[in-house]
Length: 483
Image 1 (cartoon, rainbow, N blue to C red):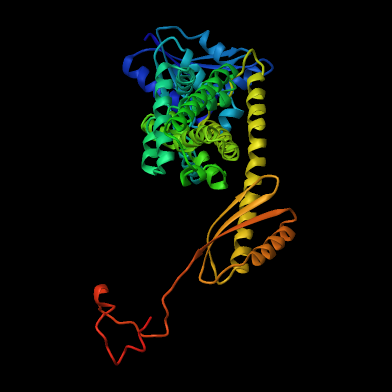
Image 2: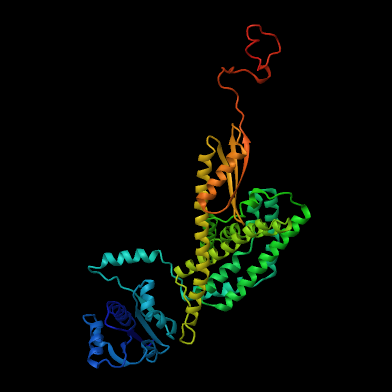
């Protein structure tokens, strides 16, 4: 380099850069130029004072050439003074996400456009606000902001993930076959196997990236891919059920016919880990695939299996669960990418992308909030109904209870009781529930008869079962052990 150029503004960080620049220039015996760019409307003496403040008291400052430039944009004014064979020493300050939003990224923009070599310096500012700065550093530690290059890389990856490739369809078919078999066999282990190969994470994460950055074209490619994956998995499950046959829904299928708050929590967690694993290179993407598959593949296959057997209510419940999971995963991914600093970039000095992003987030969030409120109310009602049934049929034990929505609220209760439960008793409890819930209720009760041996007589101990009943006459006990 032929000379050292120092962009200064009178701050402590500019003084730190000036100190380093003077030491480098002394070692290489090259001239130094300090440049201050100020916008029009400021007086010359003000700019000169800031120049002197940046160099005051530094060894060798007398030999530094001072240059004051007036320009509308500071970076452009500096670049006009810098040549390819100049060494630029820039002082920069650590700023949090809010400060980067409010203030321009001067050092970053200058660094990306300087034609020659650059040295970046950062000084630790001592003083009464040292504790505040340490606290701010700890806060910044939990805000892993992505650089513009990392954001561009994620957008490029999202464009690839949103495309319906041959690999996507092959994995969707295999996952649907395994998940359908697991649902019919009522095997959680087989369903987990389907999670390992499910490909639905990729277009959903691509949609979240498009939602965060306001890229409508990216979302347009991701949505059809998700729908095609859903249709393929549903058709595979439909054909699988028609081929092997299904007498009645298994517990694994019934568990996905009534979405709850816990199901929404699983979907939100899946979206969080899916987006975070995509943005962080050190986390295997397979973990995210398993998490998302847990919330998507089984419900889709349940839809196909239910349609194949004509169980429309089961299919409707699984569809509601799938749609809820799709929205929860997309919004959770948006939260993660927004937390990592991804924002819609300005297009032609307008905020069109920002408005599109926020509008779509609002449109997705409002329905899911209504669904979650509905699920929460239903969970509360189910809890109340369960408590009421337990009290009404005491001392019988409430083993299981399911609530089905329809023209009338249908409650299927399974009781374990040693005493008989009459139809009149069920009718009384049904009328009480209808009055309490203020809507028609149909109560159906399945009774498991509990049979216990009598407890008023002593039982023999340490006696083998084969010799518990002795065919040999025992005169002393013959009249007392006839039972």
